[in-house]
Image 1 (cartoon, rainbow, N blue to C red):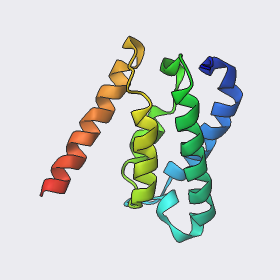
Image 2: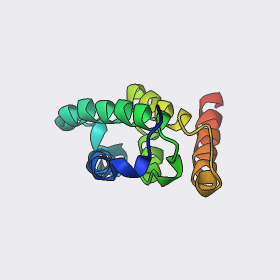
Image 3: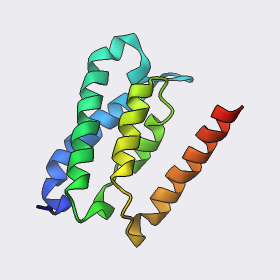
Image 4: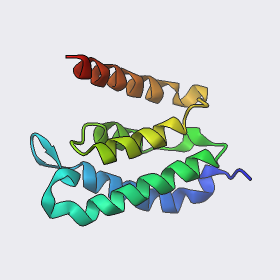
Length: 120
């Protein structure tokens, strides 16, 4: 059974707060979720990403999701568990609507940069 993502706006706002907190940089080279002092935030972040993936998968209004900028930031995490959880959420957007095409193209550009970095 699919749901309307707009019914989850209040919950998504709370989840966005967690994503934002984990994206804040403690230093110019490190996300907050990558520091030892934010270990509990990392566990919460992984739970938020798992829930988001399930919610987006069951939603027919994916274009309403507004935390894509935080997801792209989290792709630069040094923790591959975080990166894989973000990729899992992004995979749920495989059925792209015209409204989210621009956001998805930005993510694809980031994937291209990551893949090039792995080949080096």
